[in-house]
Length: 231
Image 1 (cartoon, one colour):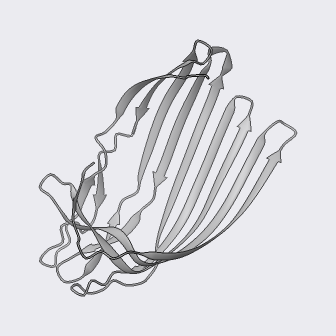
Image 2 (image 1 turned 180 degrees about the horizontal axis):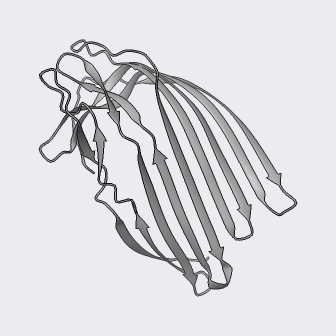
């Protein structure tokens, strides 16, 4: 997975309060296009949140992580999902904007600031069904925006930045024998993302050193066969 974890016997249980509100609208146009639009807002307050913190990097470039209690953690999220259907086309578009405020105070390092850190994520899923061939062509795209996270430095937690990146997957699914058998071929991570750059991972001696962590092993291809049992 590219990550190593060390234990923490001092963890305590977390407790939380959350609120959520949403709006949903279904629309059918004269052209035959069907749309479903969702807008969701949420807020979460967690006491003693258990989260993973980066405490170092091993010789192979993989992050060394440890689960810790976050003294204060607030998160708000505004997200939207939108689905469009027209004949054999199906399109899903999504976006989320997240703000996180947290205070990490372990009694050893200087505690972190409670300022909000923001991130933006986008995703899209497009498929086309070729009915006479019982075949569906699909593409999935995800954009992960710049993220910020605290990690342990020499005497205090420092704020590091993770660069934005894009992921694209493609699949073709075909059914046979009255849909009893499905065959899927596809490719994952077509942009061949292997390492993600992150600043201040090897902080030491008062110097910030840019580094990276392992995200994936590059582009991969797969073939899947499934048999559907009808009772």
